[in-house]
Structures are given as C-alpha cells and as structure tokens.
Image 1 (cartoon, rainbow, N blue to C red):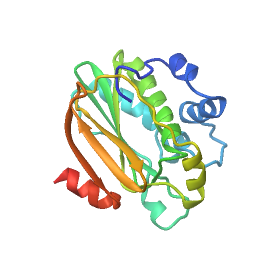
Image 2: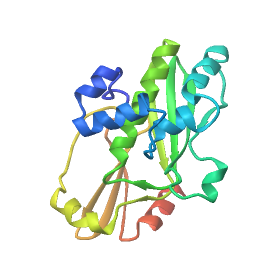
Image 3: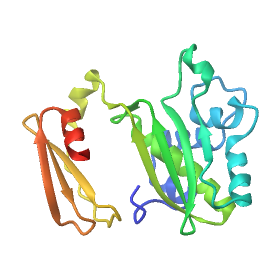
Length: 212
C-alpha cells in the first residue's frame, strides 16, 4: 500500500473490501482454534506454543527499537508435510512513530491471492499498531516466486485494464504494462518524472536488468 491511500483503521479497511475479502481479513484477525482450514491467522495464533501477534505487541512495547520482531508462518515440519504456507514470515519494525510490515512469500498467486494477502496483512498491521498507539506505515511484500496460473490467463486478458492512481511514493514507482506480448516497465521518480524504461519478453531477465 502507498501510505497516502492505505486504510488506517479496520473500519476503513472493511469499507473498501468485498464480503469475500472481509471474510479473509477476519480469518487473519479472529482465527478459530478448532478450524482445520489453511489460513495464516490460525498459524499466527495457534500453530506454535504462543500467540505470535500478542507476543510481538509485548516485545515492541518492551523494546520499540527491536529489529528482531519476526513472526514465522513456516515451520520445520513443513519440509516433510504438505500444505506448507506461501507466506513464510512477517517482520515488524517501528520507524518514525509508524509500524512497518514486511512480508515474505515463497510463492504468490499475483492474480487471485495477492490482494487478499495484503488486506489480511494490513489488518494485522493496524491491530498491532493500535495496541502500540502508533500509525500503521507501509507494507512491503517480497514474493520469491510471483506467478499467475495458465488457466487464469483468459480471465486476466478479459479483465485487462489500465488503472491510474495518483499518490506520492517515497521511493518512486515502476509502471508495468504488456503490449503485444512485450513487457514494458517504466521507472519514475516519486513526483512522476520519467527515469528510464525496460522492455523485453523474459520477465526474469528484466528483473535482473533492473536490479543490476
């Protein structure tokens, strides 16, 4: 979320989401112990011997400067069991009186799952920030294997639209579009000024080119 447009309360978050997305948010915030469903909220609260969300609140109350507030979703037994979580860890940090959240995904369905994931993470971030009497800052998601499924491609093409939002990002932006199977990535400053452009058909090569 760019901070300037992101919801800062649970009510605000619920106002911009669908009923299905709200159910997903509630599974993060209010997981049921008897549930056997695959969800991240249940793992945060019940999968280990402690409630990781409440433990993180106490840790940051005790030591606001901590860089060790890491909430693992993935555990060693997932190496030998099925249904290992795509979200592997959440890292929290307080900076300039804001609570920042960094999430790492081993695999992430960008088309169907990413938005739900971010809404759930934002809900957890808001909840913890309120307990700490802080503002929720930005969310950074790192998807180690971001993908879409082949069977979703027809729907993606059918729903392909250009969305333009006006906001100021502190780090600038990469605008991505596809034109006749050519991926075009335009980098701009926080004010929207053009910096450079990358294009090609191989997404991985483009990522490597950008990060060089």
